[in-house]
Image 1: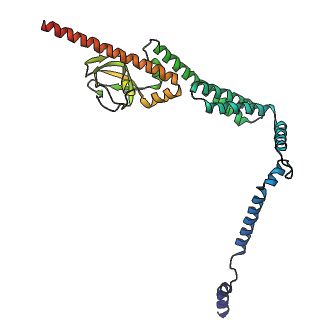
Image 2 (image 1 turned 30 degrees about the vertical axis):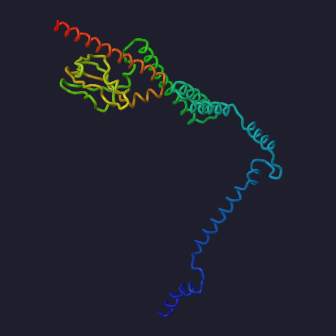
Image 3 (image 1 turned 180 degrees about the vertical axis):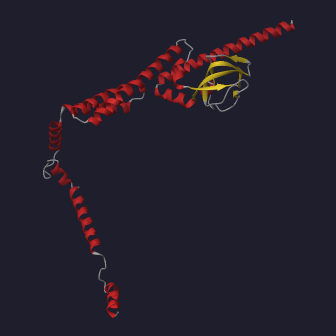
Length: 289
């Protein structure tokens, strides 16, 4: 019993005497960390970096640095690396382009060069990655060119907006449904496919193939300029203003043609209202006479 008590109190006595009670394992870890830090500090010294680059720390000049870099470049230059360098140049060029069509073209060229690099360097993953990116970019480029072409035809007089249908979603309405009211927040544009719709403020019927809600896209507060009610069961296609903005910023030329198309629609509405007003004035004059 007495021996047990003595052994129990020994750690306390060592602590009182200032003797370290840290386990030997902790001391070893601390020393290892110190050695790691010393090695890292030594490796980060400029002199050692220069030595690793093949330069003399006591004789460092711009000519020496340039010649060493040129030597490294010439030593590592291969046909595969040349293709990779050209591909990298085209990818950097995509970051400087403001429109989507030239961006897609530059991206496709860059993918082609990187695919060749992967084949020459026997890097299967790189080869397959950029080979798969080629048809994806080609498909997007074709869609964008088709979209611009359709928009240009619309601006030249074709008022059809078939070119927008791939970007639109279908919606159905029943007779008596109100699509939107005057002053409502406007978030989408509609294209009638079937059925009939009535603009209540001016008592004008809208049939298939007509745009509805396009003016809300242009108004500063994005508010509806009229109330439209379904008077015959029908189907419409819708596209959000956010999607229209996305298409616009992808290709400013498309945005220009879309504004021309919308302006033509607006002029048609004004012409129709003027004719309606003239008819009403003529009828009033006849009644007075």
